[in-house]
Length: 120
Length: 109
Image (tube, rainbow over all chains, first blue to last red; front, top):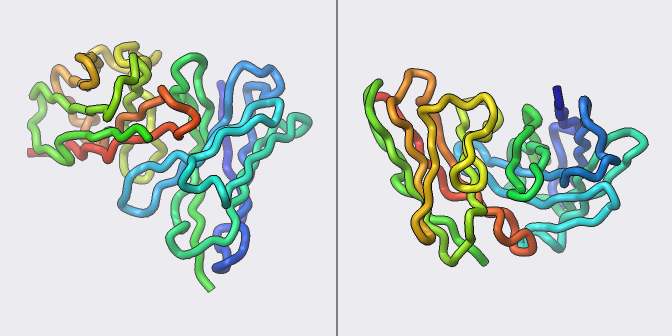
């Protein structure tokens, strides 16, 4: 059974960098079968796709956040990561990692999510 | 970029009702449309992928269809566990981002 688990600080100061890691179990990122993605959801609001990363390190980002987002992969640890620069209060949200299924890029396995609050 | 307009934003229904939720794409996206269910405090759960393919383990009362750029999620007979928020998501353009619809909250009537 494939499982994803987000981890990282729950509180980040404004203007700093938000850093999260997603650990994958039950599947191998290095198999190259899937893309791996990040999604966020502010409290009481809808879902926002942040971007995706492949085993090779290739990435695609949401154009609205492209200048602030960096995603990377560590196949030796079976993890992928998100960095979001220059955060403000509007970046406060639940952050999810998810696996993207083949062909239709459906998010077929999700982590439980981690809450990140941006506040001084 | 591709916009996904989901309607209604909320609806009230009774157990046993047939429920339909619509998502309209701003341009042709083929069958690159996925549907998710999200319950409070939980991560979303994939229901339908590729417009009409039922994800493994999802009850048969859920179905998806397409007409042009309009996509429909149908729940044939609403069950108590189906009260949740539903989202569509296009995956046609990865360069523009995998955009979600605004969501439809299904509430008990």
